[in-house]
Each structure stands twice: as C-alpha cells, then as structure tokens.
View (tube, rainbow, N blue to C red):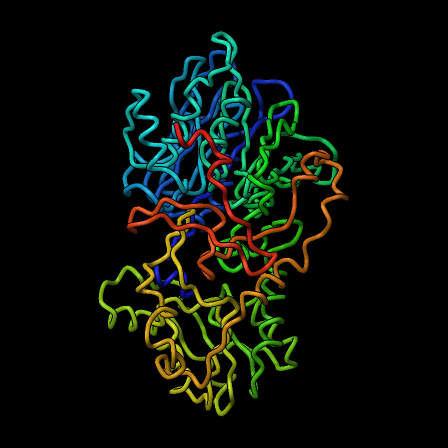
Length: 536
C-alpha cells in the first residue's frame, strides 16, 4: 500500500492492441489476447474498460464491448464471444484524468470519417485541450463527451488541406494532430487492416511493441501476431516477446505483414524528451521495461542512492508493502543493514482513500497491517516508502510499529517531495493538499511521529533513472532517423514546477510557462511559434 494509492493519485490509463499475422481469418483469438493484455494493465486504470475488434476487410466490420469497473467485470465471457471473429483490435483501461466517470467516456472511441471508420485509444492528457475543442467546434463538429480522447478522434477525422479526396493519408492526418498538440499522448489508431501506434514528440507516456509467438514454440522465430501496449509487463502473460519501444514522436504501422516505422515528428527547437519520471517511481509495474531497463532495477538504484544521500544509524531496513520493496532492498544493500519484513498486509481490506473522514481513513490504514513483532522489537527501523503525499497514511503505520516495540522509526522516501500538480495525465491532489506545501512540512518527522524523515533528491532520482539507460545505437530495429531524434530526458514537473511545454490551466488565471531548467535532465522551453496550427 503506497501513499500514492491512499491519496487517490491516478495511474493514468492503459492501451493495448493486437494484430494477427499471416493469413486471415486468423485462428488467433484476438479478443482474448486483448482482454488478457488489459488485465495486465489493470494497475493503470480501474474505472472502465473497452475493446474494439475488426475483421480487417474493406469496409471493415467493427465490434465494440465496453463496461464500467475492472476488466474481468466489464467483459462477461458470453459478450466476448461476439468479438471472436476479429483479426485485429485495440483496447483501453481507464483512470479518469479528464472527463466524468461514465460509460460514454469509456474508450476506444469509434467514428465515421470520409474514408471509413477509425477506432482510437488514448493514454495521456492534452495540454491545450480547451483551444483544440474550440477549433473542432468551429469546424462544425459536435463533441458528445468531455474526454480528450474523443477530441483526438475528431481531429484525426478532419481532412488535412493537402489530402486527396479519394486517397486518405493517415500519416498526414496523424502528423497534423501531432503538430496541433505537443503532448501528452500515446495513441493506438485502428483503420481497416492496420493499427498505427503513436507517441507524442516528448514521449511523455510509454508505448512498447511485442511479438506474439506460438505457445508451444516460445523460442522460435515464428510469429503469430504483433501486440502494442502501454507497458511491456503485459507481454509475458499472453506469450509475447518484447520487441522494442515506440520512440518519442514516432508513427509505427502494425499490420499482418509486420512492424514498420513510418515517420518521426521532431520536438520544437531541439527540446529533450520528457518521459514521465514517475512511471519509474510508482505507476509502472516493476517488471516493465522502459528505455532498455527494467523498472524494478531502477527502483533498486533509487534505494541505493537514497542510502548514499540519507544514511542513518539503524538495525534493520524494511518497507511499507509492497511498491517500495525494490527501493528498500537497494537501501539495505548499500547501507549494509539486513532487510526484514515488519508489516503483514491484509489484502482483503478495501482502499482507504475512498473514506471521506480522515479519522476513518487512518483507522482503515491501521486495519490493513499486522506487525511482525519478532523481526523488529527493540530495534531501530529504517522504513522505506515511495512517497509521502498527504502524510495521513504513514503516520498510523509509524504508530503501529512503535507500539509493537520499535525503538526508532526512520522514514526514507525513495522519491523527492511532490509539490506541483500534473497536467499531462496524472491525477495529483491540489497543491494545497500536498504535505510538501503545508506548514507541517518544516517538521514533518514530528507531524507523522517519525524519528527522522529524508527524501531522495531530484538530482539523485534523475541519476538513478538515467544511470542504466543503454545506448540505442545498438538497436538495429530502430531507423537511423529515429536514433538521431532520441536523446535522454525526463519530466520532473510535479517535483520542480518546470513543465516541458507551455500549459493551459483552467484552474489558474494565467498560463504556466516552462522555465529554463537547472539541469540537463529537464526538457527546455516550449516555443509556441513552433506550433503554428494553434493560432488558427
């Protein structure tokens, strides 16, 4: 249980696509692959789920299945049978960052265009959505939902000025969309017999490609199909092998013939990428791979760096189960202290952040754990967590440990303090709710009852993340142009207030503007003139 979970910080959304290889109709159960892929992405959204499959002929037959709640509840087995004739499809699991929680906002969205139907699934949040909504409406297009994803779908349906009436140029349409809005989105667009996988030029949200292999021949070169997912953690559960990431600004076509990189849309003024650094800290599953490195390994490095920056005299190291476990193991390894479990989690108590009363929330936290007294009674404990958001979660745990016999409880946080809201797809509490912006933060150890509290620095986090990124020049599956456009950079806006692009902020009286960064790990200023479409 993490402070992220208990504070209601949203895990964005998850997208997943599948294309059967070889002759169609396929023997591959595409709908089942999509369902299992979305189950593996359930941590990214639990509000609703949807699947759209296509037979891939021209004109195609699209079949749609959507529902509220978890994937297994949203897709009853009898309803999945209606999708069994699909040769390709896309799916989505949603955590609402924009738009209200209703079935009408459930993705993927399907719309009719001049050249036939398209289906779109989106992870992220558009930083200039208000301006884009006005532009779409000025073209006479109505919007039936409050979702950014429908807005994206309608923008793709608009015909680019240079397109021939009888020949749809989907790459041109996608590029037009990418020039209209700089970030934040990873997209899957299904049209007839192909899926286009797209990542915004800043690469703020992840997207990976996998190769489906026959279950009986896991080490063969045979290919049953291709999959694309927000996280590579979904590949193993469906018998797929990790192939590669979609690069920032890249448009990839996935068909029954294979994977083809079509184009790269560059960032303005040579800006660095801005991959969300909290994918590493918390949001992603630990077995996912980003930028050539496993998330679990990065979290271990964060723990080791934390031990270097914030050592203390103690007897044992432990964690609040279980997202911070890799960081705690790294801290223990670096500090030379033994790692032990001090808390036993009751997995059948519901989330406590849904309880409106602080007292009830704190009692709920205490009920989630039992103390493993024999492991720490009479000892000084270093307790590693991945965050302290409001402080309501960690305080009763410290109290529980002290009452069970811990002589000291030192809190070490494997990420820097969160001080600013996110406008790119993460549902972070208001600035006033964040403990790092409140007066209590000056004596946070006293406020939560800890012996001491120290956080990982921003520089330490960036160093831990970037220290294991291998050279992309060795990957022959990525085109030369893609390699040339790929540099390392991460968004740390929620920690520093330095956003990678200029933002529309509906809850502020002015537009937040990105400042020149203090380090090479941040993206540089977004220059509005580089996106001329926004002025139309």
